[in-house]
Length: 187
Image (tube, rainbow, N blue to C red; front, side):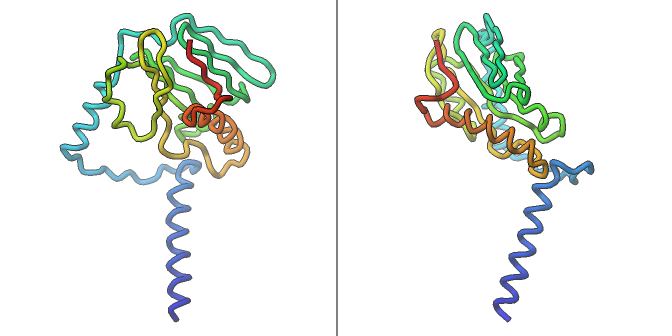
């Protein structure tokens, strides 16, 4: 009997996880629950706004070079080369940061966020409240920070899209790891 209850509990838990994970690929919108806003939430939003540095254009001098296998984005401050050029794009944000996205995941309302590069004053520590980031280094007198998504930002029901997302995101994770073959170099 105990074994039966354990199996039933595992099946119910798996069903709940699967339901949550498939909401991204579903054509029906998942019911939205409005979390109660606390003072901590308001402080977190204020901290995130404080991180924005609008006086520095990380995208200055931006050029693109594409081959069959990769695309290189180069600015006055960095060079980024990623595989599968047809699967990702970028946006230059109002605050001067640059966000990189998986196209299919973004179009399917799954987020698609791969990484955002932000330039901050070197003494600034406000970004330490961001859940998943790494200090990449300094360029142009600014600290370059890479912010990563804290969850999978792709349609997990679509095997092809997941492979594309994982391939490019795997390269981006080399930045966080500080790997010698990381696709991002600062100038």
